[in-house]
Structures are given as structure tokens and as C-alpha cells.
Length: 160
Ligand SMILES: CC(C)(COP(=O)(O)OP(=O)(O)OC[C@H]1O[C@@H](n2cnc3c(N)ncnc32)[C@H](O)[C@@H]1OP(=O)(O)O)[C@@H](O)C(=O)NCCC(=O)NCCS
Image (cartoon, rainbow, N blue to C red; front, side):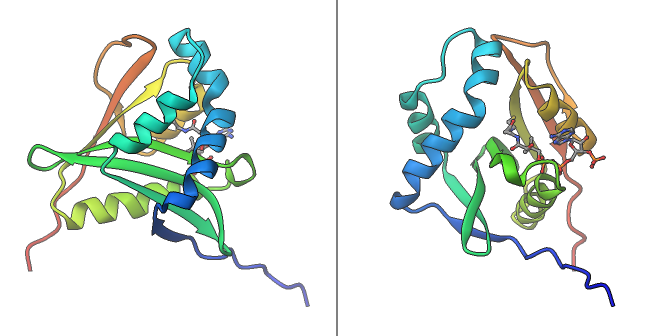
């Protein structure tokens, strides 16, 4: 009988200091070209570290004890979250994992009373633009300095 392989569950954990070399090198490798094509200047390690350090929380996504990506966000003003980054390693892309990670994040935000998630996507990152639009985000402004502003309204959880 044919065996059906079950996808291993995703694990979400907080960033530790020892994650930083993985975070910086994977971001440079995955985002370098699209950043340069959109913004016009090279992505620098310093910029990536600043982004990581100014986000309130960075979450590492793991499968079978190995990091396969990360996201980060900050909460601000009442009921809004800024989604700073969502990056999966190339082997983990286009398998529905991004959608799963986003769902997890949205559920977490909903349970914390967040009503709007906002973020930016590089104008040359057409794959990511398709991803955000397919997942319920809308473009809310004209492109500015190589970035498109996107956002999604979350419905409030029913009161018990
Ligand atoms: C953008 C990203 C987070 C999406 O996650 P993902 O796991 O690859 O996306 P999913 O497999 O969940 O795909 C969801 C949809 O996005 C689109 N999509 C995502 N990756 C795609 C790819 N490699 N090729 C074609 N379409 C793709 C598909 O239309 C897909 O639609 P479907 O649900 O009808 O199949 C991931 O590809 C990634 O990390 N990319 C590199 C980093 C990046 O650009 N991050 C976003 C910065 S704003």
C-alpha cells in the first residue's frame, strides 16, 4: 500500500542571539537582488541588522528542528501591527508554508485584538505581491521609493 507522507508541523519560537547569523545571511541571500532592483542600492548587512533590532519581535519558523524562515513584527497604536518581514528559505518556498505562517500570525494578532496588519513589499518582488494579494492584503498607496504599502483588516474574534 502506498504511504501518504504527512507534512511535519511548523514550530514557531522567539529569536535567540545565536539565530542572528542565520537571519542576516539568509536575508542577504534571498532579498539582495529584489531589494537592489526595487530600491536601487545594495542591501547591506547593517540595514538587515537594524531591521531585526528595531522590530519588537522576530519569530523563527522551524520544521524538524531546523530553521526554515522567519518573520517579524511590531505592534503600534491601538489595534495595528506592522509586519516587517516574512522570509522562507528557497527550499521551503511555494509549498503553501507562507500561507500557513501568515495564518498563524493572523490568528495570534486576532487573539491580541489587532484589527489591521500592514506592511511593505518591494515593487520588483512580483512573487511576493501575488502572495500578499492572494492572501487578502490590498495595496493602499502608490509605490514610493521602491516600496508598495499593503494592509489587511482582520475581523474581530466573537465575544464569549
Ligand atoms: C513570499 C513568500 C513568503 C511566500 O510564501 P510561500 O510559502 O512561497 O507561498 P505559498 O506556497 O504559501 O503560496 C501562496 C501563493 O503565493 C504565490 N506564490 C508564492 N510563491 C510562489 C512561487 N515561488 N512561484 C509562484 N507563485 C508563488 C502563489 O500564487 C500561491 O498561490 P496558491 O495558494 O494559489 O498556490 C516566500 O515565497 C518567500 O519567502 N519568498 C522570498 C522572500 C520574500 O520575498 N518575502 C516577502 C517580502 S515582502
